[in-house]
Image (cartoon, rainbow, N blue to C red):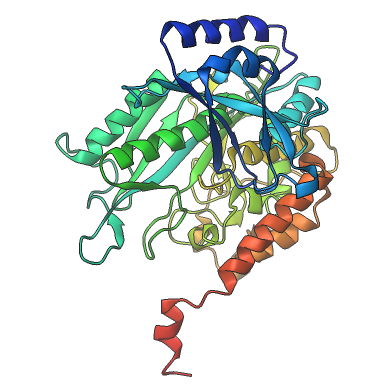
Length: 451
């Protein structure tokens, strides 16, 4: 990540300009995300590269969800030169992309830019001496269409870790890894997931903004590779009833002065008080940040018991049923981390990582947040009475219920900023209204004759 006022920016921009000219790159995509996390992009002729690398490119933001009304529509996209990469699938006419920070015409940052919201939260951590690292595990489906019915179906009938070197899905995963490598993303694992047509990609942990940049890049790569094979890749949390949905478990660690502060060799479990307080902060605000981590109406079809999706606000070790778990890191100081399991890959990673960092920091810096006891029992099988006795609460059961929690949260308002907080709330409320007014085939089948 290189911001506008970074002293290294000029040198990196010069290298980008030199590369564009040497390789005869014709066009460059300027990219950013809307409030939902959907990638927005427009192409600029590379002949103008010196100009737009220095002063950016003006655009009308009034039609970008969450970017303000028509009277405040003018925005400026200023490229972050560290995100410049040539698109490896565009071989005939070379095209590159660069991720942008969004500014207002007066030169100030635009408060509604999701990347800026994460950058602000990262700066807050930096001012306290901390660096936040995270690594999401991204699950997704690859789908084909039935020739006659024109309906999407899983592209294979394989299951968890199944292997077939001659299968088209296996070849697509390999191609995804190749493209990621060529765009500077180090893939640690790629494999088939539990459900038919479901896969997972894991990439190396990095600082939060870099990880968010990598997340949106990987989404583009995966969708591109699927399209190359006449298929569709989707990060929809629950595309099919009765089988596992797609999550995005996020591994997190916090560093200070070159050391992982989540590790403590004197603790019985080798985790520090800072990690315990971090977890407590995220558990306290779990319901309020739920519409950011699980941000679509369909997300709540995934967050139900029985499909490896955590719905109970608890933490523990190794056990995968609580909301947050501490994986076995074999007592290695650099590997100490916690994993939050409710996010899904359909959301905006800049906002998702911002709320995770903000609530974790609140847990560390506040003396008013109680650290709950860990549980290693399988809370999937707890009765309501057991949950009450253990003091375990559930995540909201719908986007509407989650938005009610979000609306009342001063912590979410602080992380987002007042205007962006309102923009996000109303954008998601509008999405929920569109969802709840649709009458489904299930309802007709179940009720027309019975009622």
